[in-house]
Every structure is written in C-alpha cells, then in structure tokens.
Amino acid sequence: MHIFSQPSDVVAWRLSQQTCPIVLVPTMGALHRGHLELIREAKKTVGPHGRVIISIFVNPLQFDRALDLSSYPKPLKDDLALCEEEAVDAVFCPAEKSMYADGHSIQIHETLLSRGLCGATRPGHFSGVCTVVLKLFMITGCTAAVFGCKDFQQLAIIQRMIRDLNLPVKIIAYPTVRETDGLAMSSRNTRLTPSHRADAPRIYQSLTAAAPIHEVPQMISAAEKILLDGEITRIDYLEHVDAETLQPALNRTRPSVLAAAVYYDDVRLIDHIDLPAIH
Ligand code: PAF
Image (cartoon, rainbow, N blue to C red; front, side, top):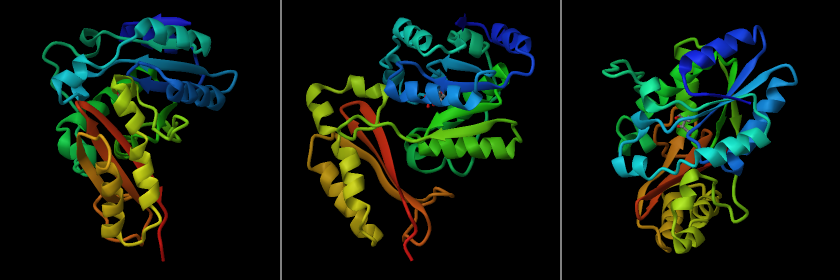
C-alpha cells in the first residue's frame, strides 16, 4: 500500500497507473465500519484491474467551529492499519500546508442547495467541502468516487458541482450505515458521553416514527416531540425538504427528505430519512 503525503506524489503515482480506473474514497479519517463499507464498495466498483485510493484529511476549510476542528478525532495509525487490512492501493494523507498554500485565495461556492439545512447554520462549510473535493478529484484523477448518503446535502451539492463544472467523475452513493440500535455511524459518535450515546438512537427513531404521517406540520411535531423527550441539548434543525431542490416542502406530493441535526453538548449529529411522494 502506498502512503502519500504530497499531492505531487499522488499525481506521479496515478500517471504511472496508465489507463487503470481509479476510485477515490474521500474521508476525514477516524475510520469506522461505515467507511470500510465505502472502501469495499469502491473495490467492487473498480474491479481487479482498477485502483482504490483513500484520502484522509481533516479539512480545516469546512469547519465553522474551532472546537469542532480541534476535537475531531485523528487516529492516523489505526486508520492506516485498517486501510492496509482492506488492501487499498493508496492512501493520501496530506498535511494542511501541502493542501492549502499560504494565502490561497480560490474556493468553490455553491449558491442554491447549500443555503438551507447544514448550510444555514454552518457558514462556509459547503464551500470548504466543494473546494477540497474538487482538489481531491484533480489530484487523484479519479474516475469515480464513493460518498455516504448520510450527508445527503453534501452528496447533492457534489453532484451539482460535477454537473455544473462538467467534471468527469462518477459518484457512487452508498446507503447510510447504522449501528444495531439505529444510530447512523459517524466519527463524532465516539465523542458522545455514555449516557448521550445511549440516548442518540432517538434521532433515527424520531424520523422513522414520523415518516408515516402525511401532513407535514404534524409529521414535524411528532419527530420533534421524540427528539425533545431525551437528553438532546438542542435541535439545530428539523426540516422537511424537497429531495431534489432541498428547499422546504409544505406537502408530500414529491419525493422529500425529513432531516435533523442535533447537539449533545458540543457534539453535532445529523440524520435523515427519504420519503416517497404521496398522491
Ligand atoms: O464527508 C466527509 O467526510 C468530508 O466532508 C469529505 C467529503 C471527506 C470532504 O472533506
């Protein structure tokens, strides 16, 4: 397994792979079972003659809170051991300096899908995501990249960036991986206190319990009641949006999404459920 820390070394490696398809799994490390499933999906997609590269980079540009960035887990040694076990071809784990030159002044701004949900309360977050993802696409020369559906707004924005900038990268969207109690897997889960961890399955429970309710205000109230019944410190948002435009949806005549972001102390967790159109 190759381990690269410099973008130029990744470029040299992928040029030496000639026409092999390359699949990228972009991560911020602290790899868990969810990531391993993304890696396995990448291997399956690329086949025996392709290459899988994992990026591990806690991208400072996408963090709006200094504490969230400084407390983000960074177990690089363990991550590399897991990548080795999964037999990935290459890992790219750059230092901040080699990704962002001093005085870097270009960023990608998405202006529509990023306005609401996480974009409303995390200023600059999606510009940071788009900028780093575009850089990772350019550096790795990947033909496809695997993203988890858990971050569905991120996924929609990256799909939009690919469409609007004509990027020759195919996105493979992988379903949310959950713990046995239903909590969506996230590197942030390890930062929950034992009591908050025991409470956190209520996030998904609130969404699944509300999903059969056809009237949107009642659906949102039902989910809110379950969220507020436990140890959640505060709800960042609980919203029903159109699945395509991500704009607030007042009814369920089109495919939609019920999405939540909550805080347990300073740990922010997100989850969502896809809802079919009701006619
Ligand atoms: O989803 C993530 O882990 C990050 O937002 C990503 C896509 C690796 C970009 O830093």
